[in-house]
Amino acid sequence: MENDYVIHGYRVQNISYAKGSKLKRVYRASKDDKILYAGYEYDESGRISRIDYDVNYEVYLYNVKEQLEKVLTYNKNTSDLISTLVCTYDIEGNKINDQMISENKQMPGHYILYEYSDGKLTK
Image (tube, rainbow, N blue to C red; front, side, top):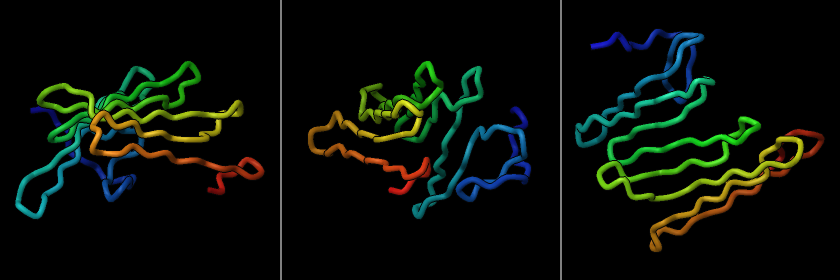
């Protein structure tokens, strides 16, 4: 088994890890004593390329400007596409919206708009 333990140094969402390292796996106990985890994979540029969860996985796609363009969520058992998050940016590279498109007709998608003032995110 590889040595993938956590060394404290940085904290992201209550997860500590060493400076300069990459998060590989997060374990969390649930109310019903199940162990849940998220496993992280990175591309050659050091960006997250995939996150595996217990029942699904996400694939991260980037545009030529190295901005996150899409996050595709798939069912782990069937490989069916569950949803697509599409990120849009303005000419300065500021994110202007996220659109979640659900493949499940009972689960509505959603849309998030971002606004800037003097180059700072305001909404």
